[in-house]
Length: 116
Length: 112
Image (cartoon, rainbow over all chains, first blue to last red; front, side):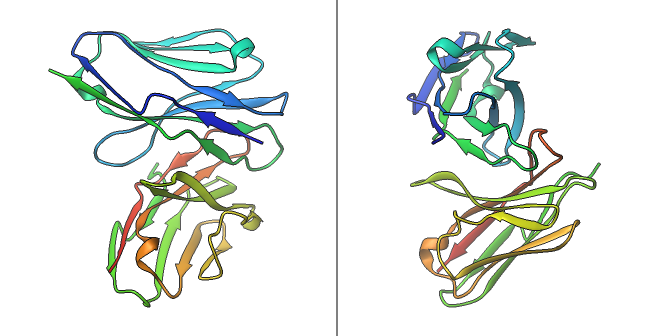
């Protein structure tokens, strides 16, 4: 069974602070994808990153970085020097690695509020 | 590229009425997904299609829900009859093979 746990329901930080959003996953698949999506107040779901299970190298994109650790089944997301525009709900998701379509299993999301 | 297009963006209807949500996937994408987002259940998959064929509809709540994909560029999700508990945001997403899913802007459905 596929499961994604985001234990942090809500986080508030002051602007310019760093913040880490936790994601722990469960899967029996040996090959899989992990994702982060952002849902701003406007409601759309914005893709941030996809990581396959073969690649445990950490990734940095501007102020965003992701730490994938297979040993602890975690795929954490860090925002450095947070800004008010980062305020949103962030979802971690898991997908199997099958031919054809792949369903996404979402965590319950973490609501991040960045206080100016 | 227009992205995934959903219509209507907002729908308010009365209990018992039929509701049809529409989705146009990104051109060239061969997989289409319908998700529902509620406060209680979060984001959950209702059904997905691959090459216009329904692959997994185990998330469809009950027989009142039905989805079709008559061609590669159009899909509908129908609720008949609608109930207040169907109130939610319904997202359509499309993807190409193993690539990540692009989501549409969602349809906010309110059933009174």
